Amino acid sequence: MFQDEYQVIVIGGGHAGCEAALACAGMGVKTLMLNLNIDNTALMPCNPSIGGPAKGHLVREVSALGGEQANAADNSTLMIRWLNTSKGAAVRALRAQCDPFLYGSYYRKLLTCKNNLDIHQDEAIEILTHDNKIAGVKTRHGSIYKSEAVILCGGVYLDSKIFVGGCEFSSGPMGQNNSINLIRSIENLGIKTGRMRTDTTPRLNIHTIDLSKTAPQLSEQEPLCFDIWGTKRIYNTENYACYFSRTTEKTYEILSKNIQRSPLVTGELGSRGPRYCPSIEDKFLRFPDHITHPIVFEPVSFNTNEVYVQNFSTSLPYDVQYEMIHSLPGCENAKIIKPGYGIEYNYLLPDQLKHTLENKNLHGFFCAGQVNGTSGYEEAAAQGLLAGINAGLFVKEQEPLILSRSDGYLGVLIDDLTTKSTDEPYRMLTGRCEHRLLMRWDNPDHRLVNFGRRVGLISDAKWEIIQERFSNERNEIERLNSTRLTPSDQISALCNEYEAEILSESISASEFLKHRGVTYDLIEKITPPDKKLNADEKFYVETELRYAGYLEKENRLASRMQDLDNVKIPDDFDYDSVKSFRAECREKLKRFKPSSLGQALRISGVTPVDVQLIQVMLARNAGRK
Image: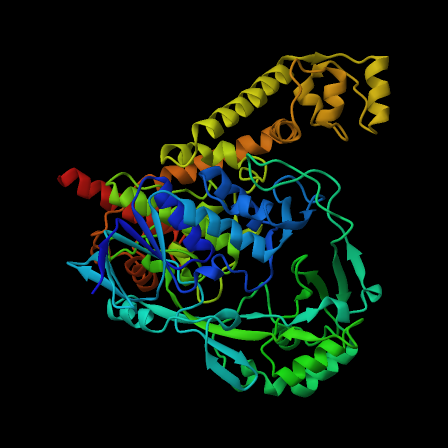
């Protein structure tokens, strides 16, 4: 029997597994990645896109912490667009269509060249433990790998099943191998699991679609990228576009006639699916009055004829899919390359995790990605990075990295999962973040780069670049705060040119930025800086000054919640000793075992009065010591 020893073992080579393995290795930890199929590293079995509101924020936060997803996206982008530009600075974000082959290749190259990291194609079938601590992993090939920590990044592969109408078979996504034995080992350790599902769309041959019946959308005509340190560029707009269309009344008729054949209706596929990315059957059942729905034809790569049909995921029988596809405008003669399908899989209930993503009861066992009940490549990569960092800190016996809800979207994601759990695929949304003005697209470096630097994932070169950027922004904000503007014909002419409010009194340049129509570009014309800022620095300065009052208010609110988060609740706190608790409150507190007063307050069913009772008990207990 082959045996070897590592400090950390990462199970899974998807988006979470890649970030987890690279983070551990980057921190100097001897790491092994076990992957069912190395050729499918960082596979994109669903929509080959990265970013969007909240999701794009997560990609930027991964970049700020020293992760690689932003670079993978930038190296595979086919088309990129700004979203929510009219809704304010808090929610604007980038979304890119990516070539999945280039995206996966980027990660594979990094993984195979990374110091301190070995990758091996094998299936983990058993988690080995000793005295309630991780001891290693056993594989299908009979190998034993000893380790101090394991990061489970199993995605949707744990005892997964594919559904195409009444056809049901054991498989991972897109016909990949799945993992059956591992979930049994996990359940035997007393870890609670559940079932979830997601769906994907049929893939079509683009040369069989009449695209003249659709509305093309091209890439932005400005240099863009996701990575904070990346090189911005304008992407090819002549050879690539996405094509907007809608389903038809004929599609609705086909659904009406065949909906009873859906496994969602027959009960064969009874687990909860994604609320915010429903299948075409879900839409029909939930919104019966909506006769048509928007769809988008999204070409997958320059090197294939394959087209992804956004907003058209389905698990209906293939003959029904065939009919529905031919009911779409321009698809009268379309050829299906791959059918759509539903996939059901096991996940681990995330309320069993600490904020570090380590299991509360099994020391050294970390979980990240869709095994925690989330959906999306961005949520997976962000969790993988945090789990990798904390597993690395765990084996080094150093303090963990815990992000608060005001540190970033990643902090909100982890807090939601560990505090509220989930019984349906969790998707990150800007609406989930109460401090989203503090956590904008343009400032993840200000919020998180210090954490990445502390754990060793931000190089000296990157650190110097970011410090220069911070200095430029800080100096310009100070300059505009101290610069007085006085009404003049020249300033009035510039205001008219920019269609901005005319300066009518002597005020600071920073105050003038808050007036209607005034932008940093106008201010720059009125009072040029000694050192010209780049586009990112300009946007940050303008946003910080324009929303200064709101930002100050948000910071105060975040500080108050942080004060509650700083009051820790011991793991052995006796909730039964607090007689005034209602039954629901006591049950929820004993189940979730909150680590702080702030987390306790965010549990559904726990009131501010309940938190005050805990605080009183903590003070009494401290007085007795």
